[in-house]
Length: 176
Image (cartoon, rainbow, N blue to C red):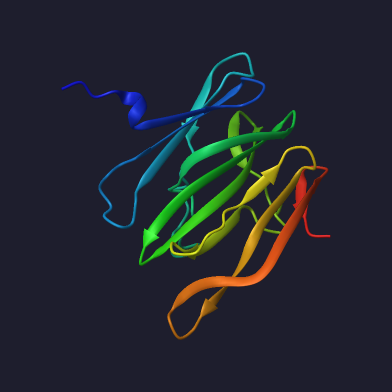
C-alpha cells in the first residue's frame, strides 16, 4: 500500500513565492481536531522556518487561541502582509474559520497586533450545521463573514442575519 504525503499535507504558496504554509491533521483529537502548521520563508538572505501554532502562550490567559487550524487559502493584500485562512474544530458541534495577517518581523513570521478591527486574528466560531465562512475579496481588499450570536436555549452559535465587512487600509482591516 502506497501512502502519498500530499494526501495528508496541505502546502500553500504566496503570490510572491516567498512564503509557504504547511498544515496537516494529527488525527489524534477525536471531534477536537489537532491541526498542526509550519511556515517556510525564503524572502531574505536565508531560509526561515517555524511553527504557526501558538503553544508558548499561557492558555489560562488566552484559552482557545484558534491557531490549531488547517490552512486552505493564502492571500497577499500587499507586499509584506500575508493573509492566511484556515479551518478548525474543537468539537461539541462547532467549527471555526480563522484569518491571520502575518508579516516577517525580526526574522520571525508573526501575527499582526490589533489588525482585525482591534483583534490580533479574526475568528468565525459557528455551529457546523450552519453555512458560511470568512470570504476575502482580493480586488476590493475586503473581508466578509456572517455574524454569529449564541443561542442560549441550545448552547450553540447561530447566524444573527447580519454580515460584517472589514476593509483593508494601511496594514489593518477595519469596519466602516
